[in-house]
Image (cartoon, rainbow, N blue to C red; front, top):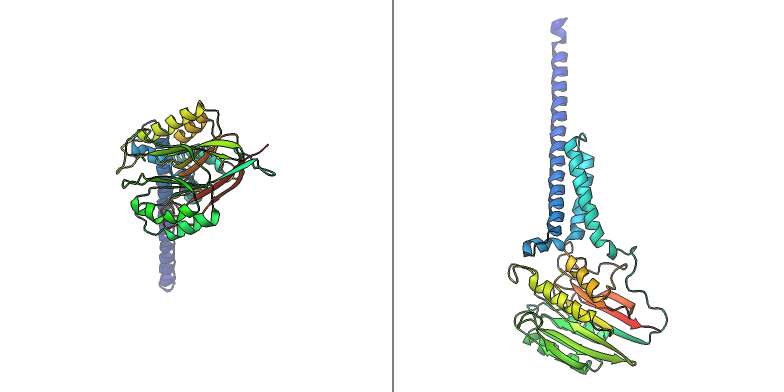
Length: 352
């Protein structure tokens, strides 16, 4: 009888052994996946902490930019840990708490730009006393395709068109726009800080200034429409980056200097350009607080303009900030013009 049952016993032992191996492999896989999501979560938490530091080094300030992306990573990390963790021990719970806290911090920064947040610039209703439309485009100095941008500008026909990162080649290519824009201030440069300002409205007191550095211009002017005069400032400060500035100090100084000028000026104001800073950074918030200007994007969406060629890594770098005299008529991120930035179009009005 024992001999007759030996094959079945051996088979049962082999089956049980195979079952245990499968369980061990599954446990190892769950453990590996849990560890992977924990590492991802801790990286996102560290990125959040880095963005809170007061250091001005470029490799610190770069964490101001991808807050939305980090939020996505944090959500994925939390979901992964909760799904794959075999048990909720003190370590896993600690990681979950850290990631969740950092998720809340990141959300506080970007919340004003969700469509369910309050609108900082009210919607304009009825007919404005005067409306002013702006189109801002960083053309990318190495971009040698201008036709699409010209067609876009002709289609939207803004009152003010600002092209930044323009060299002599771009100045020549955009000369056909002189037929549409009677007035202009042009400062093409080969260092990627050139500016071309086109206007359908006469530019009064137009001037080029160098707020911080002698090779980084800004353009300032006044325009009057329907009896309402507004001041505009076009800036494109130096970014904190390895090939540019080691710290954010030059950028921050130019932005804050501009804010202090506006603070002491009661005139309606608009600041436009590529500020090389995201809308939700501490510097941008400081600029808005000092100047009293408002961001038309708040409560309407992010309108991320950079990087046009990398969908997952896009940030709001191009801006039009306006004083409380304005209400919003239209805001739109425009299609690609072969640059690494999308153009931004905003139409604001002064209402009774």
